[in-house]
Length: 479
Image (cartoon, rainbow, N blue to C red; front, side, top):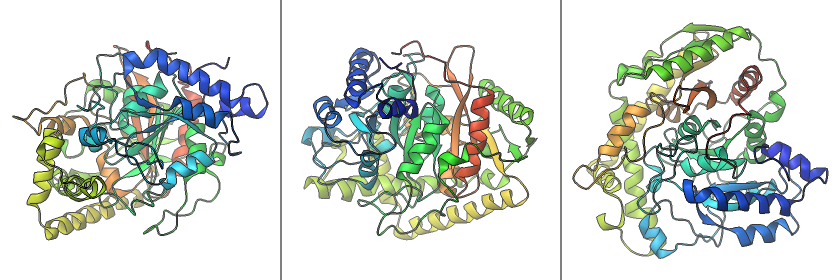
């Protein structure tokens, strides 16, 4: 029986050499989900029968043939299967997707076998997986704490050993946040590196990207290889890479100049000492392997209007989903009783902005992106920051009751000052599990590269993984 904490690359090799079969891997993943899910609530809709049937049939001969994975219950539609996006209205309607998303098709073509759908907040709005529709997902490192979000269900499934890879998406940090809180690798790729079609050209003006949370840098690189590249009709595409991303892991990045910043942009919040310590330790580790690390400050991101401007675009996206997109799919209008109080508050905020307000916000954010890019032109190769300003919060901290519907959003602002700017700029950013605090909770660090330079991120991430390996760490709730 393969060890539950082998990464996807190792499991795929077992299938290739005949040591294990796809059916065995899928059955073992199902056993682990059945054992752990009652405590963690990561997988909300199993697809065991379908997965067993696929595993025993003719799987595509892709790089991950026979390896089990999970899909986040947001965006990545599969034809003929339900998708709820954390919404009670979709759950009650048992909405079924009529067609595949390109990403779902590419993951299947890579040989993955999907064993279930994972929990996510309603429409991916808050950085925790605690929707009213399904209840909270709990962190396997300490079940009193959040997994992060919005890809928190996938992160809990991977961190606990249910599966080696979980699909994830990121519109303000939703790959990197749960990676940080669950001790995983989480790469937000460059804007348009992974297609969002055929359902969308882009989402929220280009804020949203999709990929995965994994246990190893090589898995992240190999999954990116399997799914990257434009699809027909995409409105734009990321620069073509020089080689396969997996090949980057063996290339010496040279002596890089890395700027380090642990203070939140705009000093909007105070960074917790645990997160400062994680960043400083990562900086020392980078210096020990030959890079130049120096304090620097991306002053462009200190703009006090950033959060307000970001929220204009974000609220418009939520309003579109609730006023237009899902009503068209469901054939009926949605009202405040169909969604959570925070969601409806954002709908109302989106309604309060005009089309001209939205375009003005887009223009401001694009101007900000140009100013961020100028920081790299001063000679820096990467930026090092904490992934989050605080350790994993407790379950319930993002609750937004009807009499205080914006509470969850305000709480999120305290936690995630470091991730949304790079959804705006479109730059690739990776969270790495390099630190655990005295309470045993994971504390991730973030590296950010210029647009299109996942190659540099992956080379350095591989160096850090070799210098300070995390593969043997196990959460208390695990397979």
